[in-house]
Image (cartoon, rainbow, N blue to C red):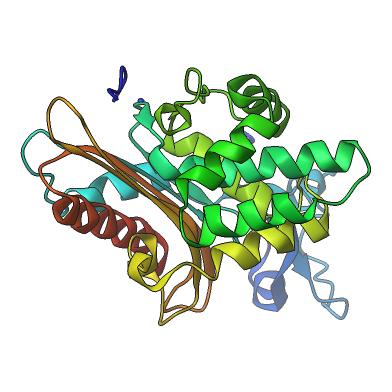
Length: 315
């Protein structure tokens, strides 16, 4: 199987200075702050300030200036740039290519590096399960015993036969694409026929999918979210690699994908999931790669990329 794609301020007249005694009694009060980080500040005189008969009364214009509220814009952070800088430290060997995305679930800030499309390999199994759960929700039913059995084997053990069974149940690519359109995945396309592993996706789309599984605003019911999260937290021992490298201890839930190319012998290695990092915050992390000489080198690459992505927020 081969992949076909690799991604006012007011013009301030100088403020008129108050007489010295007024200035000495002035205080600064923070009036408020907007959600965009703009802080408003104004000068405010103490109520007990004495009058000075020799000083002229402020004109209405001056009084207006003194009471004006001037915005102080806070600097914004370019997290995509920070991630690109962090990725400079990641060695990408040979003909390999990598893309990574990260979201701080606590702060709501995200960053993406690379916009190329990659084969999903087995990470599509999360997408297949999400599509199945959406269909079940729409039909107001629970998963059957067989579907649950397939889902457990497909996620925890990455069993391909179980994935194929559920791929058929959801309606193959047509069912997957319909679910993804509803979920907001704009650059993911299901594989032809039974080639679910050749579904094409981007790091940004996979981050969107993870938000459906782990975020607050989801098309999935809370029960469906907990179900997927639980399976992704019980991955078979031999598959404890990938984005989990960016976690503190075992605080992670993930799904990995690996696929050797039949004609080149090169490997697609992908990893997606949620990790709790050293700062105690939860992050959604996606690391996609292709063109790896070996599975082991691909794993090293996605783990380094995952660590670089989380470092953007943890330092």
